[in-house]
Amino acid sequence: MDVNRILDLEDTSRLAVITNTRLIDGLGGPPVERRYVALRDGKILSAGPTKEAPASDLVIDAQGMTLLPGLIDAHAHLVYAGFRSLDAIDRCSIETATINAVLNAQRLLHAGYTAIRDVGTIANVAVAVRDAIAEGKVPGPTVVASGQILCATASTGDTLPPHWRSSHGLGKLVDGPDEIRREIRRQIRCGVDNIKLAA
Image (cartoon, rainbow, N blue to C red; front, side, top):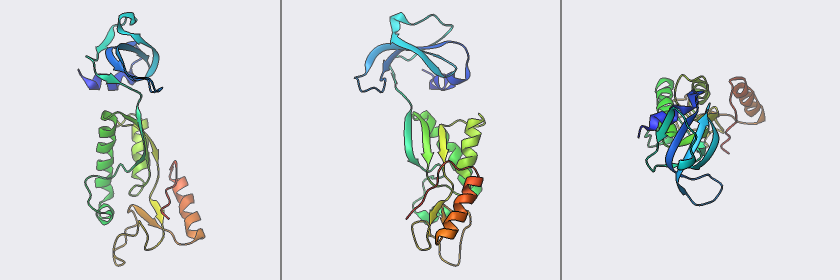
């Protein structure tokens, strides 16, 4: 079965029917075999036994695969890509971080995640990827985007030696209420959905 056909169903105004699926409805009941789900414009219209599926010229046979509501990851970092330490992340360029984020967004979508909350990024990458996904430029889940992680000097996000500071790294150093307030205002102006604070 071509899973990409299912992922593309949000883009069609035609009635689409997925048949012969094991259905988990997310309401706590056990999985139910041989079910259909009818969709239009990315919205579920009905579900039931496959033998009662409505007629449609777009039918996808799930061949017994499981269909369930999209997963949500409430703590993700799209820029991560095999880094072994926090300082390795901070040494990553904005360009490489952006490529990592786009690829990871696509991987998450294909793994069944339809929404994530990115809670710390390099520069403003999570916002850029969120917007690119929303505009249909790249595939990915809905992203709730943070900016850099707000942290104090010598705390979680302060990973590089003092002689090598990165202005775009995962951590944004803020000491005291005035610096915190200024950085929060800057991040809001840059379009973040939430603020990540590492205390």
